[in-house]
Image 1 (cartoon, one colour):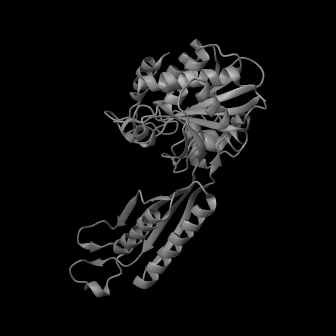
Image 2 (cartoon, helix red, strand yellow):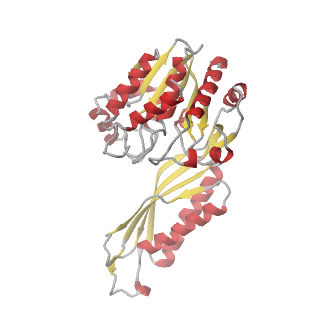
Image 3 (cartoon, helix red, strand yellow):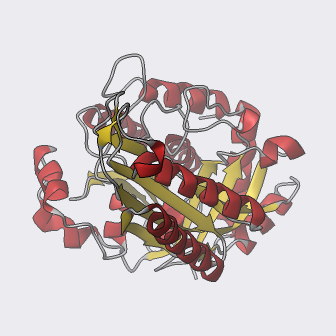
Amino acid sequence: MDGLEIIRRCRLLAQQTEEPCHTTRTYLSPPMHEVHRLVRSWMEAAGLRTHVDAVGNLRGVYGEGPRLMIASHLDTVPHAGAFDGILGVLIAIALVEQAPPCAVEVVGFSEEEGIRFGVPFIGSRALVGRPLMDEPVLAAIRAFGLDPAGIPDAVLSPEIRGYLEFHIEQGPVLDSLNLPVGVVEAIAGASRWDLRFEGNANHAGATPMNLRHDALACAAEWIGLVEHLATTTPGLVATVGSIKAMPGVRNIIPGTVRVSLDVRHPMDELRQRALNVLLDGAAHICKRRGLTVESDARLEQSAAAMHFEWVEQAVKSAGYPEHRMVSGAGHDAMILAEKVPASMLFLRSPGGISHHPEESVIAGDIDIALAVGAELLRSWSGA
């Protein structure tokens, strides 16, 4: 496979979706069966021995002995593009087609985005021995035709000595620098929380402004604090991506508002400090306005340093410019880094667009990534 053929196959997989006219494919949803069928056929044609593990990861092994895992994910966000995750799996298969001199395991993770159950990395977490065993997840596994009793067997084999992931950047940095690829030196840690602001619902016309306890107005003031802190703290990004006001009626003052909070920074200490400021700020704003707030952690993921030197050397040996960067987005690589040396190579995202139907990639950049990957596999020792 070259870059053009990989793009064609990515677009073919994008047609396997839960809703017409959009690419939406969440954890073990029905269209994942067809994705597995297609990707499995390509894996086997490349010489990989394949199986689907009990958490739904599609896995293939080439060769014998100590091996390098090359992987990414097969699920998508709602209304996704064609390349997030899938691209990395197909690049891995293309590298195996070249008959590398070392053993390789290719994995298409069943879930990375966290859309269906609100918790990301269900696929890769099982490999490092901390699977999500909530009953709704186990029910989804059974409905897909798998047996959760086999989840302990999904853990990494002792033969896995390293991890490599190819992924579109999902941001504008490489595009702005006119660079085809970038070496990831670290992945930012993430805090995901839900907050619930509680005020009093009341008549929108009959309640004077000075006697209101408007949960939406309170949440809005706090959202302003989120933006201010993120824009004044170097390296910090913070997002309120979901908001629900209740009862959600035009002529009723909102009595309850639920919001999500996503905070990321490459340094865990600074991320935690910012999170504490935001949670304390919510409590302070509510107290001043006569409301209350409850907050619940959904995810606390530490930052992960990447084993970037081997990828950087491969980029140099292949004759391309070296550029180190930090990933603000989370990836399966940060989970695998808990157990084995992990690394990532980013490919340019034209326009910086991702998580969107207009997401794209340049065929020539894929060919460069393949050249870098081949160089890395030639020099990888398995130590």
